[in-house]
Amino acid sequence: MELDNLYRDISLCTNCSFHQYRVKTPFGGLKSGGKVMIVGQAPGEKENLTGRLFVGPSGKMLDELFDVNGISRDEVYMTNLIKCFVPHSKRIGQTHIDACSKYLDNEIALIHPSVIATMGYLATKYVYEKYTSEILSKPDIHNLVGKVYRVGETNLLALPHPSALIYNDSLRGDMIRNYHKLKVLIDDCKYYPFCSIKKLHEKGAVSDEWVELYCRGDWESCIRFRMEEQGLNPSDWMLPDGKLDERLKHFCD
Ligand code: URA
Image (tube, rainbow, N blue to C red):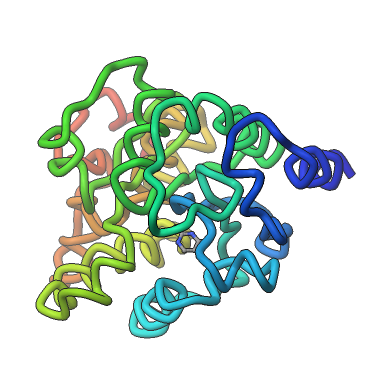
């Protein structure tokens, strides 16, 4: 209901000049349960006409990246930083972001995703600066791509915008690898139900942080996961980063 009110406010907004190009404002809806939110830049022409998200050329690329990585649209909540259509002849400036970003802030507050994946420079810059309160340069943002950062209670993943693939097919391999990280964040680690970290967490011996960053987050980077994949048996008191924590020993008996 609150989300519907927010959608209504957005579709009536006149806070910046882009409202004059708006035909429809595309909204996601919450089929996914809201664990993972994906933030794009702004609706394109087809999204503006249909009121559906990512149905134009970028959407086609996104669908390909989802398909190869086994991701379904229903598993993610999709949205944009700028809510109204931006014609090709116009540039998104700071005044537009200042006028519109409160809607994304409200969406995040209502949905409370545990993962936010940003697509492209502007969405990444806005979301990371909001979460870290730091000003990020272009190289800083470039370095974030494909890696998972936990800030507060949220795992952030910066992704390249799928539109880059429309113009440069040589990016395909890297793009597929980066979007694979999204699949990792959607799923939990397959070893988690049997992992000593789960038992230690239930006993209060390891913090939520470890579980959220690795077991339910980037489990592919967990040393325990990598050892399991190689048929090796990690010690019960080995943390996901590979450190042996002797203090955990007596919780393991
Ligand atoms: N590109 C975006 O960033 N968002 C859309 O909704 C469509 C294209």
